[in-house]
Length: 550
Image 1 (spheres, rainbow, N blue to C red):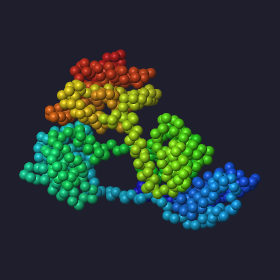
Image 2: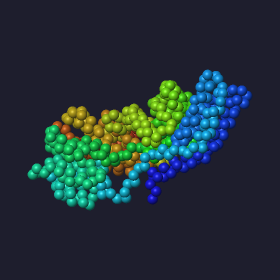
Image 3: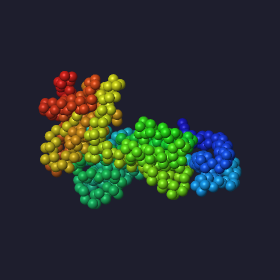
Image 4: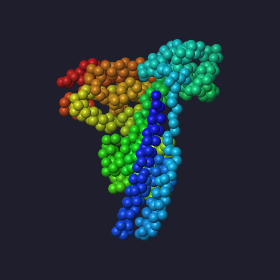
């Protein structure tokens, strides 16, 4: 089977062949433009147009490995721009002859993304399941922690000895191992882990547990290759936070990159490189279509050329920045312009960075991904609640309006739920606000892990949450939320006073024809109120006419 990376490399080589076939025509076009500059006397406007053709050729030629063509085109472009600036016609066609001569030279090797090694079909080092191995000499502790982890969707197998763990590892490799740092009779987990990892190309991630938080114990855990350290009694919420990172249960969505370049071959080349790196790339070759793409594609970074006919990159960046919606989106220029003063001038008109063509694929990937990642992070601070990472109140209401409109238009099911943590004031009064925050995070984490990626979860304020379940009828929504309610009640939260459970109440409603998001919120809120009145720790659905079922 052909490896995906090889397919990408073949596509890039195919693009170069297209460029090679087009090169003679591009030279003829430049020759015609050159002659046109002098047809009716020296014409600075036509000289600018010719310089634009040369600029495009320089960028494309360099990208596809034609360094001599790139150098000759850049020299000719610079000469023309100087002539236009000084108002003096060029006196020789020497540079044009050099460009034509360069076209006969062989291209250097095509810059390609570094080939990724194909993963073997089977590997004893790689996890063959999403299972977690929990190892502790105390069976009651193992059962308690395992039951709580299962509430978050993890599969857990428990072992009471190193021997039992080693036997299980002969037939299965877990996603992660959680084990006590010290067993009875002085058995150290570090020695066991060293033996387990020996000979493995990819070590199994390990999290250690211990009764103490002393320096020597923590150092022992680090030296044994531990990725995390938890002191008993374990705060399972914090443990799940770390597990989510180590197991990458919810992979990040690909970065969305909009490429604006009037040269289709070059735009396609850069799009292919970014897609090979796992990003989603859209291409616009006509600047006047850029605003439509911003609305439809919602990019996280714009990669654009500086010199484009009809509208320069600097003008387009300025135009984009005039719309407050896109005031913060990163705009990175990718151009064969090497004059530092011009680069700075371009950045002064709405740009954030300047990359010079030709650019090595790995450099392009790194530059783009770093800026897109920073944009996504900063954007999250504006859209998401800082404590839970869920959508904030305003964004949740906006999303509900969108989903209600879509459901009514497409005649599909939609359910909306309001969730409120029971007796939350008592939790704060008894255990303190930091513990209350951990309870809120615990519920938000459970919702994120158990609901679909197509569902929307928001923190409405305080201990109140909102859930939008698309393509879900009221009965199904009630069943799903009831399962979540039961599992949340099983989780034991940690404070200085000891372990304690918390429950939540929930109200569910569905939109009626012509109903708005605000009206749906009011219906769900009434159902939630009834859930509280009926005794809390239950899910209640709003019925047509205002009645409720629990």
